[in-house]
Image 1 (cartoon, one colour):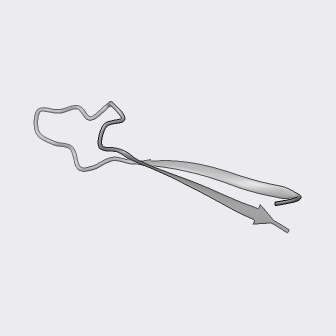
Image 2 (cartoon, rainbow, N blue to C red; image 1 turned 60 degrees about the horizontal axis):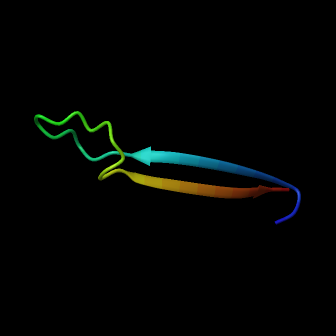
Length: 38
């Protein structure tokens, strides 16, 4: 890859479970995207 690239990261969490605050990284899915701009 040469030139300008755009990078993005998203964090997807499962639905909130009763009694859990879901603040940790356990069970979460991290998605990275890289896009080359012309």
